[in-house]
Length: 222
Image (cartoon, rainbow, N blue to C red; front, side):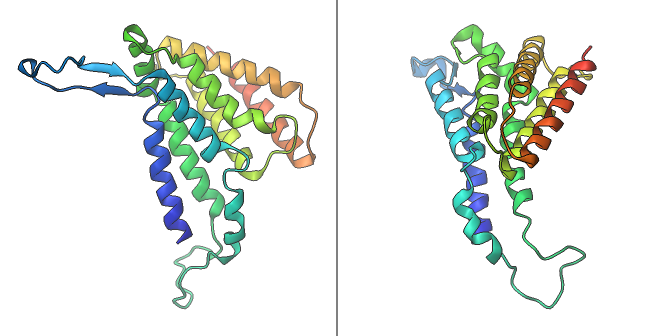
């Protein structure tokens, strides 16, 4: 049942993420005189609320805390030892990271970011730099001066890799404004992380690795 609930959360998170950079499409015929424009950007406050919801229920340090009491009971129905070459312990981290990856990949997809930039010409005020800033803030700010849990470590590395791939976009999938926003986010994050000294050893190792990844990305920027 837990996996079923996790898949439901996956679907809800995916749906909510589509408000960010979204467009309302009206396909009324001219004779219907609907009064609506064919294309209307999703209102900025809806987009911000969607980002806030994702940051709270998908990316926050406590987003999956209440699930932990179930993890040691996630045993599959027994059918002898037919695990087909896999171990039988629950792969909770992988499942949760898959959920988070889907959301991050949609928001940072070149089509989404291009749409955000294009819709800014006809009403969208939630610009691409602010979108990235809010996403980075939601994934980093809350535990910036303390320990980072396992979920957040995975998500933070994921975000650095995805933003880094935009900065070093060798296939020209991203428009220039999106690349600039990614570079701005990455350099800002580097400055934040370089000043942090708090946390236990695993957290310090994690932050050291993130700084290495950021510096490596920026050093190869064209």
